[in-house]
Amino acid sequence: MVALVTGGAGFIGSHLVDALLDEGYELRVVDDLSTGREENLAGSDGRIEFHRMSILDDGMEEVLRDVEEIYHLAAQINVRYSVENPCHDLRVNALGTLKLLEKAKELERFIYASSGGAVYGEPRKLPVSEEHPTDPVSPYGASKLAGEKYVQLYHYNYGIKYAILRYANVYGERQDAKGEAGVIAIFIERLLQGRPLVVFGTGEQTRDYVYVGDVVQATLLGRRCTSGVFNVGTGVETSVNTLVDIVREVTGVEPEVVHGEPRKGEVFRIYLDITRAREALGFTPEVELHEGIARVWEWFRSRLA
Image (cartoon, rainbow, N blue to C red; front, side, top):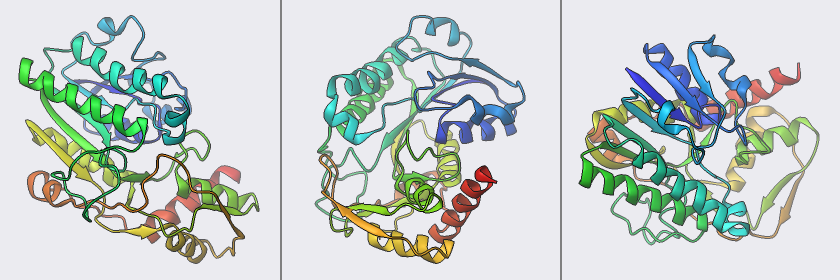
């Protein structure tokens, strides 16, 4: 099987590349390295065909030659950046997805990484199921939702099999505390640097934190679906204040905590109902938050050794 992974040098994408290589795939990876890192692909041992380019660049026709599956993870993922630069966010996330679909009408399958934390907006009911109205409160959420609609449109018009995976807040090894802005990575890096943890707002805002290995598992299981939308998370609600407590417990470090102003474009409470992914795909998250944070802590420490 020949597959393309967009954003494959990024945090989640590189873990997915590892898993697909283990399954014997012939892989092509597209990444402009704006947030991804070529070192994340070091374990591939030359078994991938890497293209340093944007999904908006000319030349994708050649990259897509003979490709049967696309795993589309390339995106502008920073909510705060999308508020400041909504046109760029739209161009990368919506137009980039559309251009990719337009060049790949004969695909066997298209797996699209969306955002469960952004497309729903401020939830009216918790946990949030896939039937919940989509009402984004950030340009990022709007652009990811537009990408979803284009995927479904190309399924309707051209028969492309697809799975749309609405990831919760993903964390794990290789997450960049600067470029990809995951709060767990940020907290751990700041702890190791002896800097205070910054909590925006009261800290009572909640998220569904899901380990990257579980996200990869769900993404691979998405191949079982001919057309569908699936939440990918743990179904567990965790506040930022609780997250600080868990980080303290796991690391044994007593952090200084300071509070900042709430950030625009971010919902207050959200966690996902993953019933559909359990029943239709057989997805079961395996890594509990304490264990996952311990893994990330050891990974960050090893980098400083």
